[in-house]
Length: 444
Image (cartoon, rainbow, N blue to C red):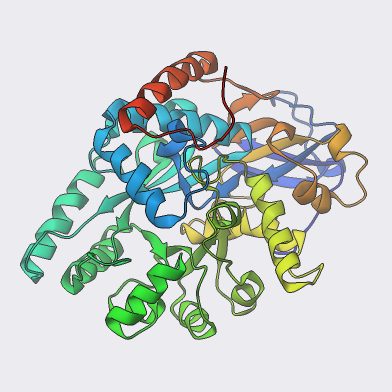
């Protein structure tokens, strides 16, 4: 996944501590009798996948968001869940999600709306134990009332002081960002001084900003009707675009807005499965890529996607564009594989050390067992990766050079214990929220 799009047959990757120090054909491999050799015969090595939009705290609600569009999805399920759940529920849900991610080859994820009431000690301990890499967008809201510089600066400083307690922990695998609140529907308020303060603090502290952008027809129309500008223009006017900003979805973005994102160096992430499932819209991916906008890929969450499998996301991204544009090559397998790896690294400001198997980069490596009925034979390895693979092909996962999964089994946690706790607590949470199962079939 380097910039030359090389495929190395019969290759090797040499890792020292947490970094890659050599990548080449086996004929050039050093003869070091002291090295720990891992036989990858028959396996394919790729960089760890980067999920740039993953609500990892929602896995206890898996399946309860079926048949729901945006507004009832937020009002009837998400908001009550955030209010009524215990802090331990957030840790348990994140743990379950991260287990699924690692099993499916995801070594880094962006969680855009981490609740301020979450148990950050417990959450970060779980991230550290599992060995995954995380970008946590702590949801930050303006102080109610007057929008003054002093009030905004105080609000942002208080949030930043909290975030800095965990930013850079777990040997640097945990980064905290600002999960920005922006107006999206009637009742939301406007706070220009607050947005400015967030932007200034993000750049000063070296933290990013992430938020949902132009995701639904309703929020795009709300911005235009309320402020007289398109969402990208509103964001630009309110210091909420730039190379330190990652936008989510953009389903209703216009050509002019795509141009604004390109000009400002703003990153975007695409979540086709959730967008299709909730009927929220379709991002014009080929137009975004051709304009030079860096585009990542994300699963969204277990509530409105039901899965954190990035292989399914890659295939769906291609098929969605091909079907809607009536062009079998509207979005290529090569492009979407880049979205899930090197583009994702760019989106989180880590292109220098993540996203590809190159000398000097962190050793986030996934080995895939392709010798399965659904991924064999191999004529074109990229085609099989995107159109045939799923999480079950993941054999081994390394993060920072540390092996965290082998032969499909996690090495750092008792999976069965987590699964048992998740089912018990999920049933209790559903009863607490009084949410009915969306299916029409009757269990006996």
